[in-house]
Length: 452
Image (cartoon, rainbow, N blue to C red):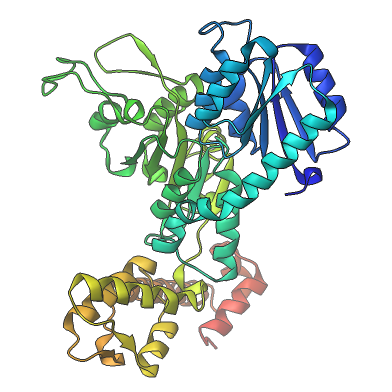
């Protein structure tokens, strides 16, 4: 990476040092951010990704005199920053600076430094970072190789958004139909975040009853209710310092929403049976199959809670809108289940591929997965044919029920129009007025139902 494309963070409690570095680097780099208080490192790294961090060895807010730089270097590594760290040290602390190299620092510079030396060290750090990027890419993208697959434009847009927002601590709302892979996307966000080595806790909040909601999320003390035989931490505590994934968030009641909003605003939970608040530090990811416009109805969901959970939204497309991703996923599931059931890799003939591409997938990726698993289990040969591809009767029944409902509604509307027109002896104006629609709208319905 060239110096002019680099983002640099400088952490030092000496304002003169920060000013000197800013004046030196501002014309040379893409962006330079300075910070006096090392306690803010996590918050700064959550907001932005840096290529190089210049870190002082000593701070007046002492943690362990003479070792503050080592302490904060370890913290930067805990926060999963990929930045190359260059230590800034006084001449008398060179031994500590050398120790910092063993703890993962790239290099150190001694105050007062020569500007050319500092620039050269930063350039070397950037070159080293580029060389190591290839080795780091494999684990970082593993979830995209194993679970979250897609070459379609809509999925590439989602992958790009995940990589942009994951290193921040922004709250994410994932929207999409059932079976589209919202939980996998939540896991990908966690994997790419600064909290990736911390817990990832999932809760299906839509399935929690009013009585279980607070106990499950916030925990309880022994004796708080009849079955509370021991102290228990809730999911918020379990996810502390990590990511909390609340699935089916759109199905919780207004009362549950109020409790959740209070916790998110105060960043504290209180276990049932106590009055003692417990501070929590979580990255929140939520998901729902309810469209955002419908969710925004305040009779159903609080708008202030929507704003709280929806700093950034990701809309996952249904499988029927992902084009050739269908075949990519089908081949992936074929390999997966061929290995699982000790069969040779089963390919698809042309008619099977055609059947897969032209199906509408009301159950989305989940339905495709189960369809391929069933086909692999039942297959006799080494090629899957169209007859081996049997889509779920559960989803077919659901679609048929929807079509029947639509037919019934159309019949009711047609019969109502006929009855009102007959009541007014064919007077369209009076019939339209009673139906609460315009004459033009009524004429459109007459044409639709082939009346007159």
